Image 1 (tube, rainbow, N blue to C red):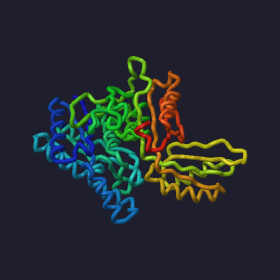
Image 2 (cartoon, helix red, strand yellow; image 1 turned 120 degrees about the vertical axis):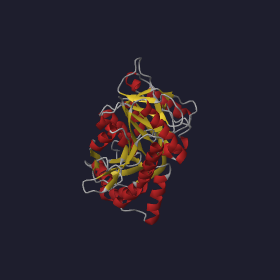
Image 3 (cartoon, rainbow, N blue to C red; image 1 turned 135 degrees about the vertical axis):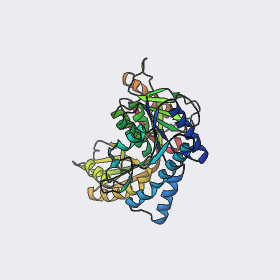
Image 4 (tube, rainbow, N blue to C red; image 1 turned 180 degrees about the vertical axis):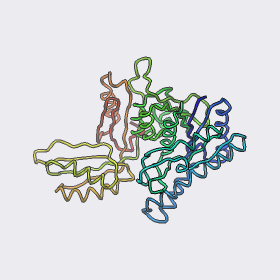
Length: 393
């Protein structure tokens, strides 16, 4: 008997009709003889509604109470799905993250998973039930409800699949797989039948919205086969696996872009040891994640410039931190640009082929697009450009 973990996103459970459709998908798997564990997101738009309520009450809600509030969205969708399954003579039991023993640290709004007790889930599976689990949430050592960050239901599903030894973790969304780029931007984008974990990790980190990056990291670490499927269009989807392609890997597997970017530059800082450390420490102490970093060589005047990118939501906070840091370092001034985007090409075949960067830079130059920053790895090239050019690029 095969064990499958199925995760359904917010758009998949956005209405009662869609929840009933999801119940049919799950029941069909049970009728094939498979054991199924289900993980759900909140209904489409519900988490944003709850966040809006919190922000209307106070501009910076206390993190513990924020998690208490936003975690309720998943409880609604899981209970409704369990009701729908039971009505279709498919035994189901809804469970919160803490009821299944998902333990996290105490970092509210972006908690990390510390462990999972599988006893309750195993008991339900043996008894013939479909456990329907709230994604995105757990419990810390002090008994406080925590959340895993946006997209955290993907991570919940992968953790359950890893700990239960599932044969496959299926991520159901509103697209029928992983595409070479966003098909809403490029109509010629094609669905890929197979992607390596390495490529998917790069694509997720570079702005592809199909999977949360933490879920891909965990799936790769514990070798959990992932399959991205559409809730609304039957098909094979895209398999994410360690298996290499039988033929030589394609040069570029996908193109990703991320509009949620902002650039900050510290200009004219004295050239002395510890400048980068001081900047990074100040930003990390403010709990802000940094993406790309570039530091130039000292100029004739003995000054250095350092630029980095952050998420656009953190732009104002990061600018405040850098203004104070510039004074302490004796830098001339700080510049910011909140209207940039990151464009990336990804492919394991790039390891053994030269000229990809040249082709990419030539295409941007031909369209008159200025590159602000460049970052590379073995299988990806990323550039920062003005956001207005992202679709043209």
